[in-house]
Length: 101
Image (spheres, rainbow, N blue to C red):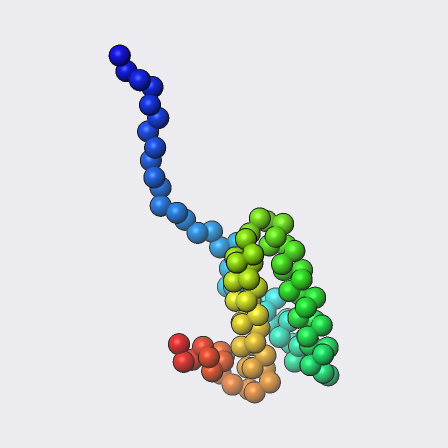
């Protein structure tokens, strides 16, 4: 007599990148330009807060954990910082922290 057993096949975990930075280059550049034009740090901080709040809300609605949200938003703003450095300091693309890695 055979028992009806289910075969469990383990599949490797696959990561899905919902918001790849390569597809956000326009948003990164636009935000960097807006920040570079701000007259004060307080104005730039308000713009960053507005953008990050919207990003966190969008990522939370997709069901990402807080850790995943932090990583995605942090990576986005790192790229924005690099672009602001490039715009303001007329450097080659990237920032000093990227070139050290």
